[in-house]
Image (cartoon, rainbow, N blue to C red; front, side):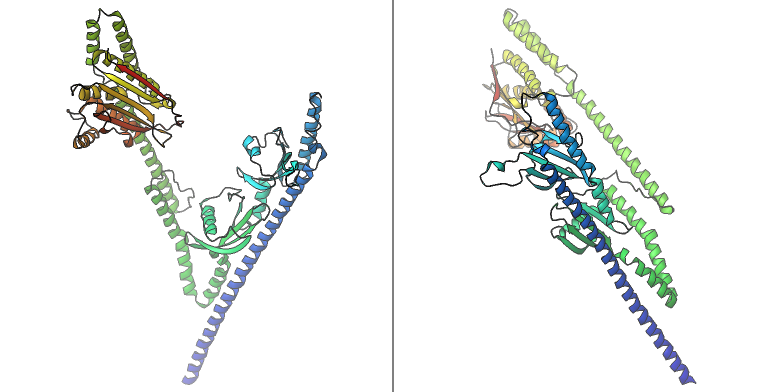
Length: 582
């Protein structure tokens, strides 16, 4: 009896093993069949869509040939004579337009038709203002398909037979057919009729006919890397965001349109997984229950946590515009909503800080503008008194002084390079009348209307006179140069040079370090420090003052700033002003 029980137990275990083996075989067999069925079905849908697309392409080409051979269009220009009244041309125009409109109405897949005569530039379209860009017509190919501005066109020209060295080589007119985006979108949706498959329809320039999200962009990049866009038709797979995808492509040889459909392997296996759960629930209910709990945990918790972590990383990288748009109806919905509120608050705070910074810069800029040395006015008035016997000199000094203070006291945030140079010229003329001073002002003509901060040149010139020329016996030269930086269309270089003693390399390094400080030390020139602070605040640290040995033997003060404007390169013309002491 005991032996019998052992045999029965062994038979039961063996039967159980057979059943388990059978279940495993049945599972694999079912999985392979269902996967093959999905692949076959997807391929059939893609072939059907490709067939419809080929039909639309042929229909567009036939419509173009029909229009190009229409006698009313062929002789539209030839039938019109200068001595004929205008109504004749109007009738011909209406006949051609009605012919185009009729072709469009009789064809479901055509958006518009247009005829373009190259010599006269005349354009007649089936709909008003379908294509209103002259550059579009001037760059048309003689024949073939092309895309422009996310639209697909077929163009053919008359005559469409070209003979070597024949006058017929130059097209008389072009016929342009635009395919309907709505119809193309319908074809694309044929291969995207399930919840788990996605599709793309690419124009010849590889842009999508419809909007693409991040998943589509990633899939397109992966397919391109797999050379899936070069073959006429291909089936392959790629990995995206940790998931394996199956894709199919089909390229229309004539129009170069590409149909793409892709779907994750995990979605293909979903029906198989359901069968497996039912099967293994009967045989191994506990194991099946654990698998179900694991799947539910992954779907309801792990994915939500991953989404939240991904969003936090975007915020960490400075993207305060990111939001979680899908709020599930569970605890994660509340967490996601609080995340959105937190990011919005942070974004408002950052904007507030930026506004405060801009307000501080404006206030600082205004304060720097009004820090003008009053002793200049006293000395100039004293000079006028001393030369009161010379009426012409008094008039010149008064005129320059008036222009100087009119400019320096005018409330404004920016001026032009030309106005700043004019102000500097007035100042130099005043100083040349008071001191032994020769100056040269050199400026590229093309930059005189460029915007610039006011009161930048005068403090640099004043510093060159006080600390350069007056510090060296016999020094008397100032050279101011404003030009477009070599090779940079938007950057302007300004240099003020003197023939004073200059500075050593160590002194220059120390001076640049001191000027970079936010708080001015007493021994640092007020003019240099003010100019440097305004340049850095407005144009950035790259515009800070730089010092070097000048060609005159003294000190050269230079700064380069980006105008953010398009400036034409000078053709060699420079505006040069010279002055000397009287």
